Structures are given as structure tokens and as C-alpha cells.
Image (cartoon, rainbow, N blue to C red; front, side, top):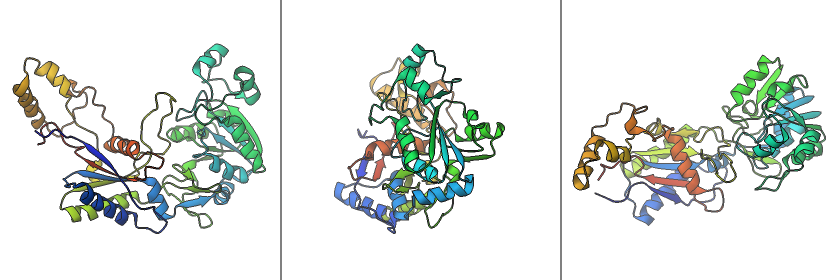
Length: 397
């Protein structure tokens, strides 16, 4: 039997610019990697390209002035509530600038003890010591400071309460910061609320509407169409955007299923094998030290080929070895386990003890997380990831 299973390679690519055909450039880079590394393509190899370069190739950008124009048109530009933004200069600061430029006053409701993706404003132990209940207690900044003092983010060294207040005021709007987890508390303060959470946005909108809020928007409702020549994303709006310059954001890419399909077609034709493809963004994993959940994009993969749909359907080898075949060893154990794997059908194994511990996450979330960890977010220069053997099992020779 061969000894190598799944192999993941980061593939370098040229610096992508607006107007480049990202599918063609990706296919060309992968074919060069095949030659350089002596890779023999196999059926169900996976090629993934990061959403960042897809959006760049599409020129999917917007300025804070264009954001402001959309916010003002949709809210009226008076007192605007902003609920549950994540604590991020890269992800949210320019969006807040655009909102502030469009408004007379911005009331920001920060969730605590942490934001949605795990950036902490205050430790749970401090809440316990102060007798504060984050589920019911809404605090002003003065009350928060009195109980907890000034707390800096452990990674960035930023006091996000002051940072967001100063940012709003720097745009000429009045700022009010509140801390709480009941979004309904904004309804008596303003008729217009933009809920800035990512994965809980549907619930937040439902609660606001039920509480009688007149104008309820999410970040996914802004820049869903071009505004004054801006980029846009009809499905996700401002969700998944990143800071590009001090005045510009890069939006989440569009048409990602079409991009993945073209990459797959080009490489399948070039290799004679069935090559799967996907566009990936943030991985879905949590940092155990900083307690930050990485997924600040609305999804891990905004586009992929049909062969990447679904969840793994795997047997737990250690369960078979310890239970069903606990009396076997050596070649007999190998053959017994191999036979059991070969006998596996396409029927779901969820809930079956023999698959216990193989969490049924979406394949695109698993593979996208693998890709994000491989490419990183710094200077590796590998926006393309090539994966072989991901769908292999113990029986593949």
C-alpha cells in the first residue's frame, strides 16, 4: 500500500490585478506547478483560490463615500443604530466611517464580553466579580469604565470603545457607545438600525422587527447593487469586505460558482482528470489562545463545483480496530478494515457508532479551512491551494 495520503500544496501566482481572468491565471499556475513538482493529476484533486484575488480581479471595490450614499438613501441619515459590530480595524472601521459620514448621530451597541467572532472586551471572570449579567444588563461607557477600567485588545493593543467613538466623531457625527446583548434596546433610541453581526444577522433582524423598529438593515443589505459606480455583492452586500486603502474596501467576490466551474473545466481538459475547484475565504476554526473564531466572512466558500457538496461519510478506523476487530492484528486486521470500508454505501453514517467522532461538517468548510491555514494571510504569496488525496481512504492504493 502507498504511504502518502492527503497532500496540500500552496501554489504561487502572479500578483492579480483588476481585469485579469482569475480562472485562466489559476489554471496556468496549477499547470506550472504540475510540471515543476512532477505532480500527476488524479480524479477528485481540488484546486482552491482565495476570495481576495477573485474580488481584486473583478475590481469589486467601494469607497467610504459610496457606502455613505447607500446608507443615507436607506436610513434617511438621522440617528442610526449600529448593532453588534466585530472589533476589527480591517473588517469594520471603514464601514463605520461610511455609516458615520451619512448620519447625524451613530449609536453603537457593542456585544460583551466579546464580539461575535471572539474578540473580548472583558473577561468572563471580571463580569462574575462585578456581578454583571451580559444577557440582561446594558451599560454606558461610563458604567463599563467604572466597573472594568480601560481594556486593550490583547493582539492589537486597541481600545475599541474609544477607537469607534473617535472614528465616528472624526467623520462629523455625534457618537454614543452602549454595551449590551439585547438588540431591542436600540428601538426606543432610533427608528433605523443596521445590524452588523454576521452569522446571527437573521435573528437580529427578526428581533428588531418584532420590537417595532421601522428601518431594519443588515450589512448584507448595503451595496447589493452599484452605488455611484461602486462594486457590489447582490447576495452579501458589505459582509466579507476588507480594508483595501484608507478610503476603500474590497468587497466579497461575485459569481464564484462560475469562477470555480471555469477553473475546473480548464484543468480537467488539460489533465484528462476530474478536477474539483472552489473559492475560499476565512477558515472556520477557533484560536485557543486568543479565543477568536476566524470566520468573519459570511461563508467559508462562496462558490464551488458540485463534487464538493455534502459532508464526509467516513468510518472511524480506531473504533473498528478497538471494537469490531479487536481480536485481529497485522495483515488480518488490515484486510478486515479494508473490506468494511469497501462495503460502505453512500447511505449517511450520521448517528452510527462506527462514525462517532467524525463530525459531519460541510466539505467546503473543512477544505476551505485547510486552504486558509495553508495560504495564511501574510506574505506567503500562495493564493492558490492544490490538494490531492482528500477523498482517499485506507483502501486506495
